[in-house]
Image 1 (cartoon, rainbow, N blue to C red):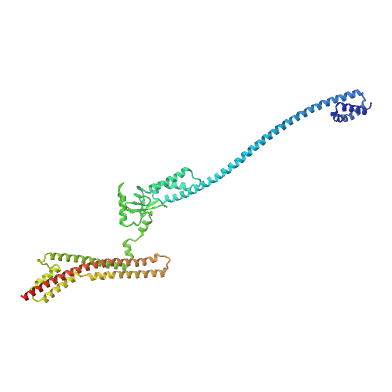
Image 2: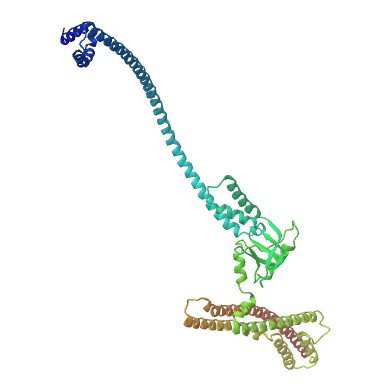
Length: 475
């Protein structure tokens, strides 16, 4: 039997016995063809040996195939198990995905709500911070200029720390700001006394007990003080206000606790006091009138002295006349009525009424002239005083116009001197003329009354003498 027949017979056998593995065996036999041919060529053997050898190889191949099939089945089962596990994992992941998606959507909505709330809170916080900073800045300015800070200097550092902060204020910081404001409000209504350094106008410093009246004024003794916040120094006013204002300061300083005293309070915290101090005194006003003002004052003083002398003289004459009228039996020559009566009694024996009348008339004229003495002078001075004031007005305006011509209108201080002279002299003239004119009216009324009394008494004596002469002639 040849090799080709052997292969064909073997192929048929394998095809019937193992149809599923035919392809594998064919491939295996194809691989053995060459070796078998070579072997039979080299060492021809029996077919039985060849068959046995093929059988052995087939069995070995069958074992290996079963092992491989087992491995394949094991791998398939493993893959199916893994697939099932993976599908289960996918289902779990899908469910987890849906759960996470729902949670994500809910978190998105919550995040939007929280973002809106955060924006609102940030806006409120920003507004609060702005109000806090503005209030802190205003409070710092208030406390730096406050007289209370002189008594409590630590407040300057506290408010500076609060005002200079750049972070969002904490609750303790806001409470501290509130405390400083409440302290300012409470202490602004109190009168306090404490020791501190005071700078004199000459520059020397001394320690003194000062009295603070709220936020408005601070005094020591009868002197008003000025608080310079930029230097944190208490300085005496170089020019103190009028005397009655200083008296109120002295009364306040020397008052005991609980005493009620009057005090000239400056509600503007020094502004009105500064204007009051800068306003000229009476002497300075008079000095602004210059020469014309001095002349007007001299004229007024002369007129007032004359008024006083006349008033005293007329009062004295009036009292003596009244005393003489109460005692007509005792004639004295220290008054006009007494002198008229003395003249009448001296010439009563004369029968000529004309002679007696002329003698009495001479006494009346003399006494009336004495009574009205000085009144024309007072009237003239009352008329001259406003005219002199007008002269000062014209003189001051001339000086003002000269200043405008030389320096222009850029600096009002250059024109102030002439305007002050013009106004002050006018005021002085009116101030002198008005009392002189009123005094003249009063004195003239009194002199007229006295003259009337003197004339009536003289006429009465002449009437009595005429009656006596007529009676004697008729008898």
